Image (tube, rainbow, N blue to C red; front, side, top):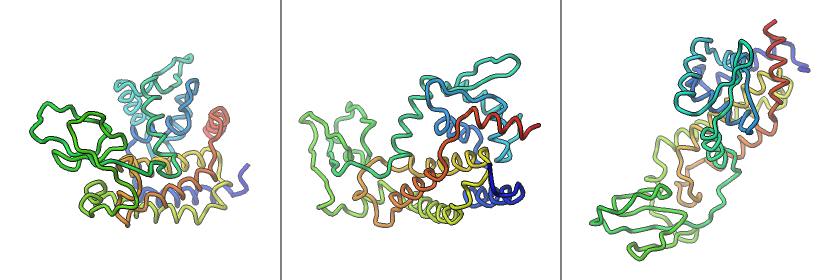
Length: 270
């Protein structure tokens, strides 16, 4: 049970919400995807409609907005609904779970493990060449990849931390907007970390909403960055520092069982 008084816990949540979001609620459908990906990615995990309503209500979302978001996610194949009497439970679809798992490999990674990449020069006259979704395009005839092509129709050069990478390549892979977003997120994470000793004393529902907000904020930055070794990024890239701070906060906010959250949400509603 929280040792913070309800008013103090509510004030702390509001403060940290404003820090992470500038007081603006995230896009609801995207936030709901993060809820499932962080709290209910297991195959048998389901979130009741009432619990989902309680979670998104903490970010200021109205029930009608949640209905629209859930309808969109069902239509796009992200989630499935399961009738439980007069209410419904929701779960990731097989496809949605696969997408979440793929993103999780990046979101929850402590740091990139690959120490090498390859610069690939293609024949610009070869219009029939199939695009490689694993490559990061630099120009119409050059790309960087973690898995070099095996054919003989391209020139491949190994890259590692011992060789300086031109600045134009670094900034092509990680532009000014992404650098700024990452620095801004690090500043926000530092402010949340300053309250680390108190967040464990918040009610479970608020802790989990805060956890999802942290994951969501990090997700919006790191999934825009190419999955490449750090030496290919500008020196001002703060991705590794953010990953460490996100990890520290998530350790302080371990997931709460959905059944326990549902019980708290029901008690709170009554």
